[in-house]
Length: 57
Image (cartoon, rainbow, N blue to C red; front, side, top):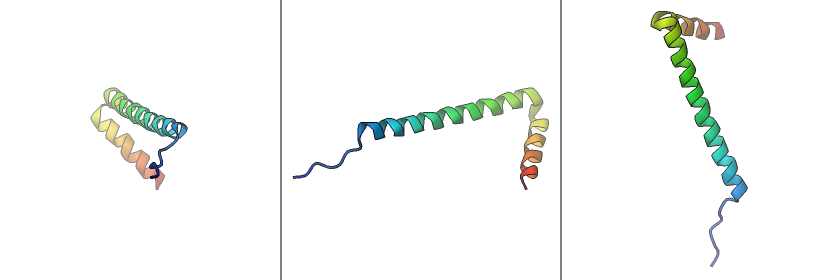
């Protein structure tokens, strides 16, 4: 009987590093959003987002 193929340890380490970096990036994005919201308030914050999205197009 053949054993099922298991990913190498280095592949597991790379995958867990990617997941950890993605989670850290998500947390940083959330903290940045909350900081802008606290600094500028809701109305100005949404105006900045709308103008930023409009500038992309």
